Each structure stands twice: as C-alpha cells, then as structure tokens.
Length: 236
Image (cartoon, rainbow, N blue to C red; front, side):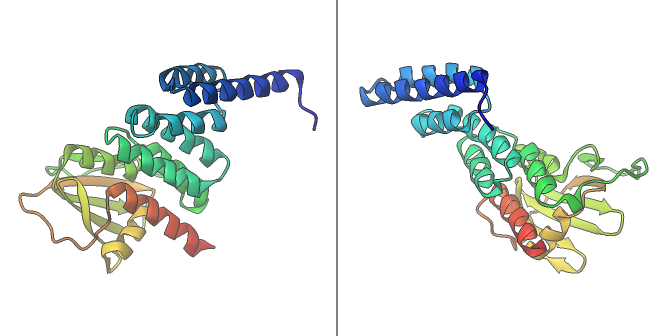
C-alpha cells in the first residue's frame, strides 16, 4: 500500500531528526541531541526508532530518561507482539529507576501471551474480618500491582491469593519474593501457578520474622518476567 502524503511527511521528519541528532552526537553536543529527539518524539510519540535512539544516547548518564523511554518502548513492542524485546525494556526500566511501576506492562504481556488467563467476570469479592495490611480484588488490581506495592514498601509477610479453584501463597522478605506455595508445589513451580490466578482476591499479612529463601531470582522483576516467558513456552 502506498504511503499517504501525511505518512511521508512524518517519515521525513523522523529521518531528519535522526540525522541531526547524529551530527550533534558526533560533535559532542549530546544535550542538544537529546533535546532535539525529545521534540521529535512529542510529534511522533509512536516512533520506535526515535525512542530507541534517545534511549541509546541517554544511556547511564541520564538514567531517568532512559528508564522512561524503555517503559514507553515496552508498550510499543507489546503491541507488535515482540514480547522478548518488551521483556528486556521493562527489565531495564526497573533496573534504572526502582520507582517505576511496571505492573501494567507485566499484565499486558500476560494478557497478550496467555489470553486464556485473562480475568473473567465473577461475583463481587468478599473478605473475612481479620487484620491484613493490603487486600483487593484481582479483577480490579492485578497480582503484579500487589507485588509492586509490597516491594516498594519493603514489607515482610505473605500474600494469600484465592482463586475460583485454587489458592496460593507468596512470601516476601523486605519486599523481595523468597518463596511460594500453591497446589502442592513450592518455590518457583508454585509461583508459576500463582501467576496463573487472575480472578479472585488477595490479602497480604505482615510477619515479624523472615522466611527461608527458596526462590533465588536476581529481583522480583526478573522473576516475574521469566515466569511469564516460561508459561508462554509451556503453552506452545
């Protein structure tokens, strides 16, 4: 299909911006290159090539900008069903800026890779009257959001997830996932089953003592992304 005049103009703008940015980088005017690419992205927000170049130029010298671009790129790659690259960009964003919430990106990958796990409408959630720090309905708040809150608050305790047909536990030491229990499985195998629970409720209860570490991932983000990849591979 032939490009429209408007599409051709956008392509020309992007190519011109990239060329000018390269000239600025060549002559050590990195800040000008960054400013130019930011302006170009404001007009072409869905351009992967512009965002990737800005991400590369910023690198470790401007970690917050690099993290923002990585997060935006992850969404664009998910739309293209390039989940491996989306995985890498989400991981990079979280490593560069711990404040970034990548729960929506994780949920998008899960929905796209495993549509069979998408939440189904069900009856209104009800909670028992007992003390807990955090609670919610998985149809409104994903397990990824709950994990993000627990991690950011550096809480020690257990996240109890109740689905329609099964239940699971995820244990945390100061916000880091260290163990899981679900359907007779423990550790990583159990966590895979927990991630598959998308309808039901969750409750987090703090504990005074830490749990033994049976899950030894580099980070919660690594664990979540690797688990989503494994679930996808097992389905194929």
